[in-house]
Length: 170
Image 1 (cartoon, rainbow, N blue to C red):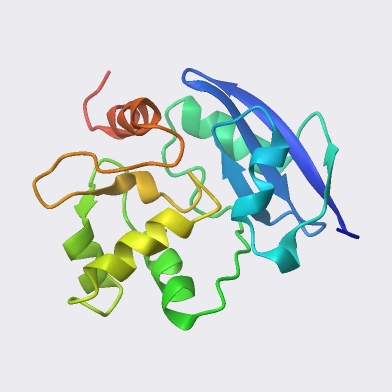
Image 2: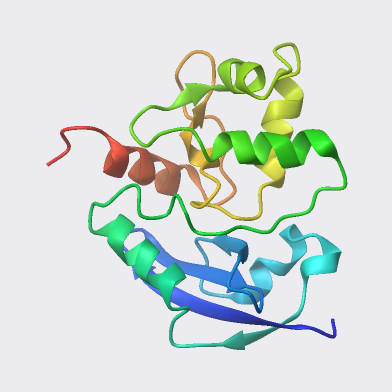
């Protein structure tokens, strides 16, 4: 790891949220953990670097704070940089960024939106391999029966995020 990447931690109602960003400010990884080292294995090797702790990451941190304060669209325009080694995953992650807060979809619907309606397992794999939690909102994808399914950062976190985004929650 020869590159340096910036790391910042934000306290949330469901625990610490850590963000790793490249020199251009694009989010390379994010997740509900206090330790940036927990994010490095989920990142593509070409994007990894030595985390350098910062008090905040400027507009990225501001966007997360605004999201937590109820501006659910605040994270939509935060740049994200992920590499998958495959065209489908990259496309699927971009499609996922268009899933609106408060409007979760099923893995089947997600596969359809990504252009491969029969590839439900590939859609689930895109969620599982997503390194930029929250910014690429894999928490908004549910099983066909409406149950939560899995989430790298735990089902209580996924449940909180979905509840936070639910219309009329206040």
